[in-house]
Image (cartoon, rainbow, N blue to C red; front, side, top):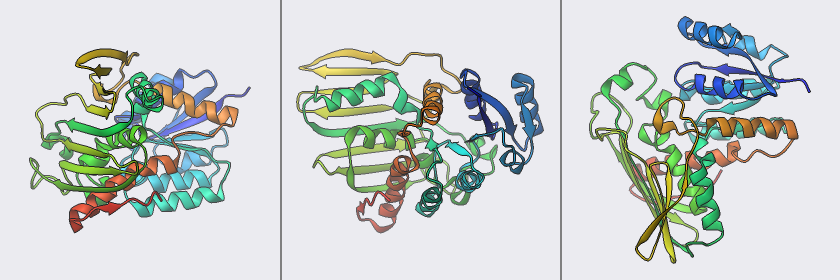
Length: 340
């Protein structure tokens, strides 16, 4: 079988993680990398001996490239994805899939015109061994009925972090702050594990980076699930380190907690480690180790012509949750989820 050709758009922080994952897949070949930065292009060429380009349009015209990985700043995700889809390419987009609901609707509309196109979004933490085990335990009612769920993220982002990238910290280009950049993974896991959400009420604020960023560095929300239970959520970039995310599910017959790359079951006061995330971590520790698994799955779905689970629609749920928190903050009222 002829290998699928792929190209990566954006070779900054996350692009090299995609490149390494592609290089480990026997049925895929990295054909090209696009980046405005000459040094980034040289690094990609030296390591993978692929074509390198400064302009995105050049890879869209290459018939040997079937899949485009979009690893650019947030505001470019949807415009570039739409161009790629219209050029007949499959696309795998780093989160967030979009920076607002209009963009989300735009890409969904385009995909209706290209029904054979695969379009996926990176939410690598769904592929963690701990996440998969937690999902099965909930589905099998190993902790009984869900009574509540909580997600807590306390990380640190410095002034320099925003000043080094001129697109960060701005509504127009980043689309938000801690919600859309860091905590989006936690929100996605909360709805993936907890089920459909009917409403969300929350607030956002800038606690430590006033006069540095336009967007929030702190957010909190209450999630109202259709199954009558509640979720609580808190996220901040104003802590002093990137501490472990905690995601816990309270059940009628026990609790499960995802923390420190472990899944912990607590019953009758006794705690047991049920699963651990294994694998070599690439990039920053808090990215986890499951980009390889997700990228492999995406290509296998293309090859085997199977449905891909983290579609634009599925990834869009977290975008609506985020937009719901922003709207709730403005109106001081709960936002009713629509699941566009």
